[in-house]
Amino acid sequence: MSWSLVLFCAVLGLLVGSFLNVVAYRLPRGESLVRPRSHCPGCGTQLAWYDNVPVVSWLVLRGRCRTCGTPSSARYPVVELLTGLLFGALAWHFGAVWELPAYLYLAAIGVVLSAIDIDTQRLPDRIVLPSYPVAAVLLLGAAALEQDWSALWRTLGGGLVLWAFYRLLKLVYGRGMGWGDVKLSGVLGMYLGFLGWGVLVFGGFAGFLLGGIGGIVLILAGAARLRSKIPYGPYMVAGTFVAVFWGQSFVDWYRGVFNLG
Image 1 (cartoon, rainbow, N blue to C red):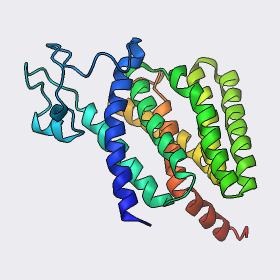
Image 2: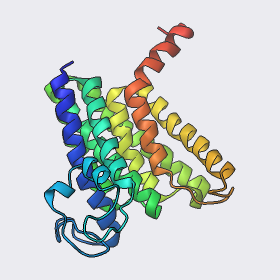
Image 3: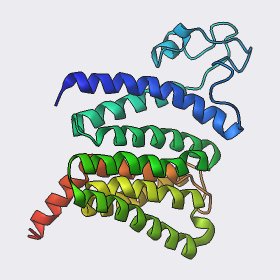
């Protein structure tokens, strides 16, 4: 493991996280992602570069606009910090391998889709659908460069299997499962399948487990009711990353306990 790679990816993640905040705010509103430049929603003043430094600027300004004092959501530094931590953790976990860019991309779309889903209870096709060809190029390219042909077929099969499972749930539960969740499942299945069939099963189960726990916590806290529609995308993403980091260790432990070889 190279600490310089970890540090580079962590800093890159902070910068990417700053852009993800723009995407999470503007894309659901149908606004351009590049124009106008970042500005205060209160007074319209364009932000200087030193007011756009990830995490640091928000802390220095105490979460307010320098010009008019309009409060800035704490989600901005959270998204930046989370993206930076994920990028660094992925670099630490994988090291300098061909599949690292693929999982950095997964971290980026996972964070921004989670933020949008929490805000709007939607997983935009503009992010999910293009992720299929991007994931295919990055993952299949990594498998080919490493001459790991089994990973190539697991990537394709994993995406199909998890998509088919969620599609079946949609048929059974109807409104209880959103189409956005079904579409996202295929992308996540590709990433999980690349790592192994056991990891795929573990990641799918982890998403449901985290979703169930999260739903119970929200109900107990009074933030949701039994039949409330709860954004499920963040739990799918969280379950996927639990599997990315610890799925294979769990599979190995499980096989050892039950002497499965």
